[in-house]
Image (cartoon, rainbow, N blue to C red):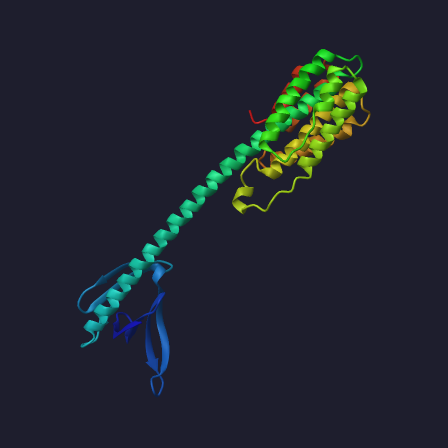
Length: 309
């Protein structure tokens, strides 16, 4: 701790003292002059400039406005003032160095976070796209078997399913889906077995994604979209969409309720900035399924609302 006796211009005599984080000017009062009364206290973080001559120390610092204070050393206190000024300048340099290191560390942390966020975003999108292809293919198989079975279509969807599920399992090694039974059922043209296996795989896939535990994330990563929670909602919406399409084909009497739930989830994801879509446009496209004969083009348009293309 460095100190110097002298005069603070605009006030009068007292002592200027440098502590670890502050520069204070005080006077001693009382019978034994042991009571310290602080007249001015300047945080080192507020100091803008320091100028020192033999007998004077001028401090420019931030308050509600910029303040300039000049302290003049008493006779015989010039060396003390020089020591205080040097200590102050050294402390400010050290503080600046630490602040710079802190800023550099923060920038490195942010850069690592940006990289991690981008990696998470790319992985999330890729998992969703592969999951969407898998779900599409399974629902495609089911649609192929409504009314009159179209086995050529079912076999095409089976091939697409196998390719997409293998890609999905490479991204999620712990995801276990056996497609042996559905392959045999489709190739053998066993209608009920094919339907049962398709629903079984869809159910297992749904349980995995919707029941997937999401680890605690950095608050900043939660604001990166799409994130793992977004993916759960997107996959749920994708199931709903395919269920609506299938429901149109089989004339499901509860389909309006499913449409309402689907649109509600889409609106939530729009509000969360996961999707940039127009709800009315999606609604209009869905209702075209009921009135137009050729549905594949409409189904493709609905898929695109949920895909990152």
